[in-house]
Length: 275
Image (cartoon, rainbow, N blue to C red; front, side, top):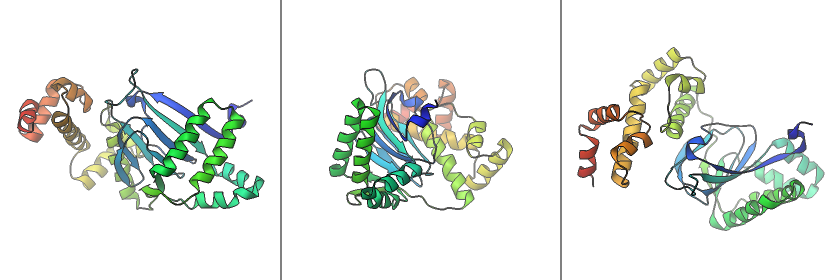
C-alpha cells in the first residue's frame, strides 16, 4: 500500500547539515516550522529577515520560502535541527466535517493568508506539543495535531513574517531570483540553475536580468558574495581561505581578485581597516 495513504499529515524531526537544507520552494500544503537549533536568514513571500533557534512560523499554501542556515550554530555533528508539520486543505475539511467543534478553529486558521510568527507565550505551547510528538504513535500525533490547530487558531500573539502578495510577473520573478541567491550564495550556482528556477531559458534569463538589474547575473552574484565576505571579515576570526569558501567562492586567487575589484583593497587590508 502507498505509504502516503496511511497518513493525513506529515511530521518530520530533521537534523541536517546547513548546506543540505531545501532551497527556495513552495507547496500546496500548510507548513508549521519550528527551528530547534540554528540561525540565519529566512525568506518568506516578500520578506527576508533573521531567524534564531526557537522561532516558530506557520506558512499558508503556495507562499515561496526558504531558510538559509549559518554553519556556525550546529550540534556536534555539524547539523541544524527543525521540526516541520505539514497538512493540506483536504485534512482541514475533514476535521471540520467530522468534528463540528473544529469548524470555528479551521475557519480561523484559514483567515491566515500571510505567513505568521508566534510570540513567546504561544511559541512555548507549540514547542511543547511538537517535542512531545517525537515519541508518539501516529494516532497520538493526530490527537496532538488537533490540539495544535486549536492553538494556531488563536489570532493573538502573532506577527506577519511574509505576505502572500499578488505582484506582477516581472517583480515576482525578480524576487524569486534574489531569494534564490540569498538562500544559495554559499553553494555552487550556475546561470542555468537560476534560469531553471524561474522557468526561463538561459538566453531569456540573462537578457531579463541585465535589463531589470543593470548588470550581469555573475556580477550581481559576485557583489552579493563579496558583501557576505565583508561581514565574515568584520565579525569572525575565519582566515581568508575560510571566508572565501563560506561566501560561495571556490578559488582563493579569483576571490581575492574579485574582492580587490569591488572593494579596491585586499581582504586582509579590509579586515585591518574595519577591525
